[in-house]
Amino acid sequence: MELEESEGNWHVAIGNLTSDSAEKEPVADLSRLFRAHVRPLERAHKTRKKHSTSWNSVVTWAVARNALPEILPMNENTLEALLWDALSLGASLPVLKGLINSIKARHRCYLLEPPLAGNGAYRRMTKTLSRFQGTQHRHVFPIHRDAVVSLLRLPLPDHEQCEGPSGGCRPCSLFLHRWRDVLCGAVHTIGCMRPDEGARSQICDWWKDYDVAAGYDQFAGSAALNISRQKNDAVRRGHQKRFGRSNDPELDLVDQMCQFHLAIGLRPSPHCSKRSNPNRRCPDCPPLFPLSHSNKR
Image (tube, rainbow, N blue to C red; front, side, top):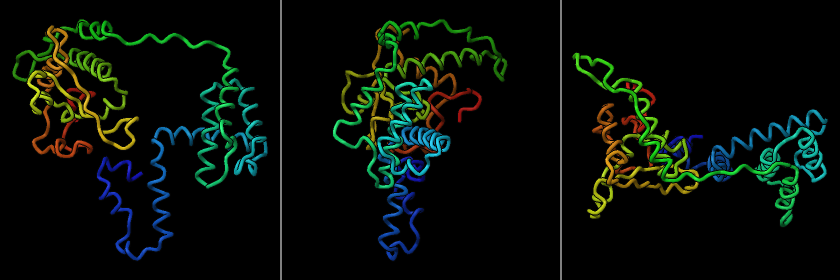
């Protein structure tokens, strides 16, 4: 969608979607544009994609059962028949909930009353379906300090195997790739980040001594990572993850990030405007964790 792909440049995107004679457009057309481009943003892109996949399953089931006229609007009898077939096929609780959620979302889209609309009906249904799981959840061990320490102390390959253009030694590709992976894992773990947040980060999002610039000299040697878009940040306020300085040079993530950027030649573009527009993607700066040191963009 145009508004999602604008990366914060909403005014330009809305201008492209509106005709030159916007002031003369009828109210019905403006309402149509709003429903088409704004209302879907109440759910994240991945949530809408999951709903679409689950709804395709509902339509496929309706075709197989010759029940297409009964899915919009859908009554509870049809929903129960769908869930019975899904249970017979061994569908897990997340799959069953995805089917129900996609049905409710599709009904809301067309201003129809969905099944399980009563107070507590959805919760009672999902609790009932959870009894069919049949297996206990595996224990999930928390990520603690020792895991990050082991990651930062992971042995790296010899970094002076390759000859540079002028005949001198330079870090080899294997060393840079392993170093990048270690730093990427440490940054995501310490910052409690999702993988896509780090994948979208650029070199201009890494702000060294960010708090020092605000007058907090005790935080010298620290850094902040600007996250412009986060799943639990629906209003796009932005987050600046903090990374402190370590007394042990071997565990100083901020210093290692600076050394990695220097070794690979990563630096913000002189035309970068990320500080003035932190919610927009910079068209000139490379990613924070490039896939290849030979192709930084």
